[in-house]
Length: 88
Image (cartoon, rainbow, N blue to C red; front, side, top):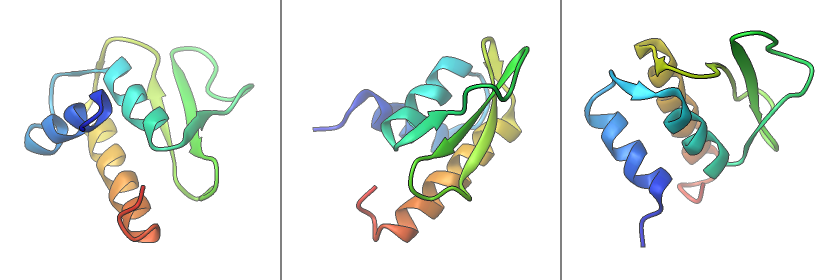
C-alpha cells in the first residue's frame, strides 16, 4: 500500500512546481532524512540522510517549494534508491 509520501513523490515526478514545502519535508522524513539542529536558521532548514551523509538539502520552512528544491529532492531520492537497490 502506498504511503502519503509515495503519493506526493509520484506527483512531484510528474510536475515539479507548486508543491508545499511541508510536502517536500514529508517525503524526506519518509525516506530517512532528519533535520540537522543548529543549522539552517531563519527561513530554511538543512536535512541530511541518517546513513548516507552525502545526501542532503536545504528546505524552506514554509510556503511553496521552488522548482530547484523539488529537483534536488528527486535527485536525492533517486540516488538513495540506487544505493539501496530500490529498497529505500
